[in-house]
Image (tube, rainbow, N blue to C red; front, side):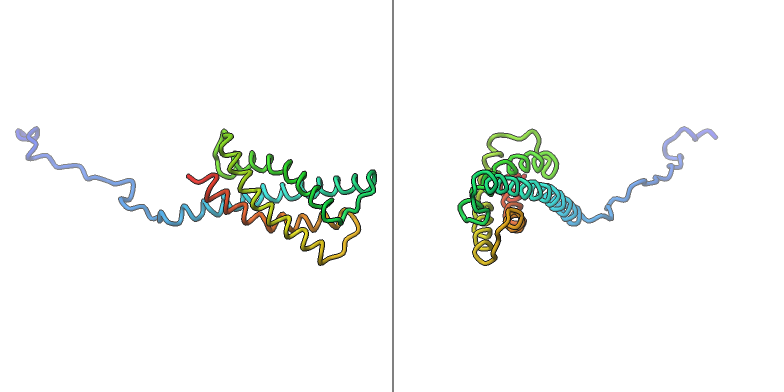
Length: 171
C-alpha cells in the first residue's frame, strides 16, 4: 500500500491502562489503620514496660522489706520504689517507642527530654492513683503493692500515649 507510511492512514494501537486512574483505596482509611498499628505497638511496648516496672518494684520493695525492715505498703516507700522503677523503665520505653512505634530513629536528646517530661506528667497521675489505692486497699506484702503499681502504670499509659503521639513524636 503506497500510503502506509503516512500518519493519516495508520490505525492507532489501542491504549490499555494497567492502573485505574482513581485508586479504589480511600486515603482516609490508611492513616487510621496506621494509627491503630501504632497504638498496638505502643501498647506492646507499654505492656513490656509495665511488666518490667512491676518486677523492679517488687524487687525493690522485697529488698527494702527484708534488709531494711521497711513497710512495703508505706506511702513513702512505695512512692520511692515506683519512682526508681519509673526512671529505669522510661528510658527503655523511650528507645523502643522511638525505634519501633513511631519510627523516629535515631533518637535525639531533645526528643528524650520531651518524652521524659510527658512521661513525668503521666507519672504524677500514676503516683496519685497508687497512693489512693494504697489508702483504700490494705496491703502488707511487696507483691500486692507491686500489683497495685502495675494497675496505676497501665492507667497512666493512656496519658503517656497521648503526650507521645501529639507532642513528642508528631510529624
